[in-house]
Amino acid sequence: MAGNSDPLTPRAKLAVTAGKAVAAASRAAGRGSGSVIGGRVALKLDPDLLARLAQNLDVVLVSATNGKTTTTRLIAEALRAAGPVVSNALGANMPAGITSALAGSSESRYGVIEVDEKYLAGVARDTDPKCIALLNLSRDQLDRAAETRMLAENWREGLAGSKAVIVANADDPLVVWAASSSPNVIWVAAGQMWKDDAWSCPSCGGVMQRPGDDWFCGECGFRRPTPSWALSGDHVLDPHGSAWPIHLQLPGRANKANAASSAAVAAVFGVPPQVALERMYQVQAVAGRYDVVQFQERDLRLLLAKNPAGWLETFSLIDPPPTPVILSVNARGADGTDTSWLWDVDYTRLTGHPICVIGDRKLDLAVRLEVANQQFQVCENLDQAVQACPPGRIEVIANYTAFQDLRRRVGN
Image (tube, rainbow, N blue to C red; front, side):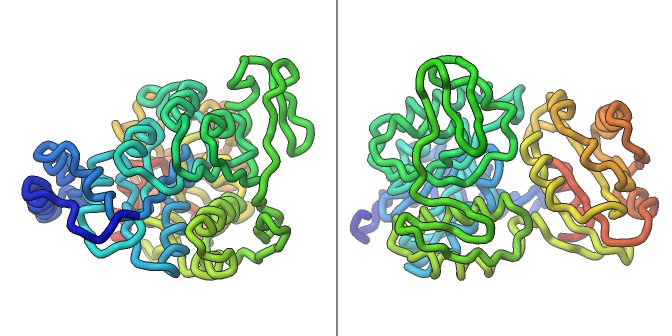
């Protein structure tokens, strides 16, 4: 970490001030948090601002297709045991949003930053991170993001020779391929439920063999590395073989995997697993995810699922039938305008659940559910869907902008 001298030039200070003013104006106009537009203005005035803001911080970058917002939050909570933290906790994960977040705190010791997969290499160059956590790679926003193997290649090239400690998921072949160009990697056995993007070898294109939890390419020998950290049931196993219990308020196996990776990151900064995991228990929800809210005198649990891997994980944690489920899908810019991914989701896992469908692309989703032989009802909006649901807590699953729409409607 650099010294505590002020890294900001007069131009940088002007950029920060202007960015904050624009963000405040955006909030006052009801256009969201203003972090992205504020960051864009600031970077326009000083293109090197992100690097300047990161100078006095020990930085952690977190990137993945799924789980990066939650993992960023868990790491931030763990590192607060060692000092003040600044983080882009609300998920504005491209350079403008990251710049806004870092501009909001001048006293922090640590910067815990979620980074969109496409921007990881560039943000790593700007922020000189001490640690980078790589969780998973799967298909997502195919109209915007590159095909997953191309993303893995971009990570591999961008991180080649990096001085950062890379904490990477040993169970995802694409992540392993990306991280293997780095000289200092800590492997975590965090698991991989969704395997449909990892049947061909990222090294040679051969067919991957997957006996049990292991994987390897029979053609070139590329194989799963030996992990030093592992998720084992409800415990994290550290490099010394000690088992530390995971007590989370967040549901599901995926969040235990996020906690395991977060504990490995915290250890890089000298925070012991027991302390890190205890602090993670404080996290009840992440930017509205997993919140239970009251709406029309009903309990609704809000769940975010943005892509096939995310939907698969979400289906594994909802209450069993006959719990009612509302599904909402949009296809706006932030979601990706291509809805073909709906056909990669196994909706037969919802058999027995009463289902209501809403959102901009409700008819696309209705066709997919029809093919999956699911019983469902198409509704105009959340109000109508809630009224159509039988008694009991309702599980509400939505992709990105649909989730934000729902949060605004329920006042969350």
